[in-house]
Length: 275
Image (cartoon, rainbow, N blue to C red):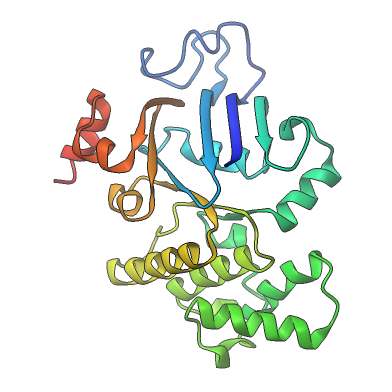
């Protein structure tokens, strides 16, 4: 069953003009409009996510993958957005809903694990406090219940429970990333968006973080969108993959097919660069 479906979505930074789409994209070789100078972060994007499925989004820096991730996680930022995003169980285009509806979805049903730790966590809070904040926003009120849930999430994400009351700033990078995952999963969302989940981590730590998420994702049947420039991350986690360049999708398909038999020249270059 389809959980999320997006059609013709776009995010533009700047005033925009009638030629923005015409002068940007893969064929144009740029995401900056030659007429007005606006940045077309992503455009003409059609993607869907099934319940329990992991969709990979891969591309080099500046390809628009993080802008797409934020848009699908209902974090619009300063961009002008357009298109149609539908979410199972909700009527209407999510890009047009009011602030309260968007916040309710982001609190309970759609979670984002940010690329940059400081965007996803308050480092001056304790690790447990960062996770508890999400529970309190969702309406939890019992201190005992909150603490028990935080302990459960720390155990699931392999964070030492005895570190729960330590400031998050004292955690290692890998532990901070796992706190973000624990926070994202706190109220059992249906969709988790992970934006560059291994940024800044050593290879051995990356593997542990990814294995932790993959285990939890499969055990609970959570759908996910995993955004990464690292083909290894996408290959490990994703059922299907889309490849982005200059703000457009240039290839899409089952992950094994995309990785082993890429059709687009850019995808071939990406894969060859890591072989």
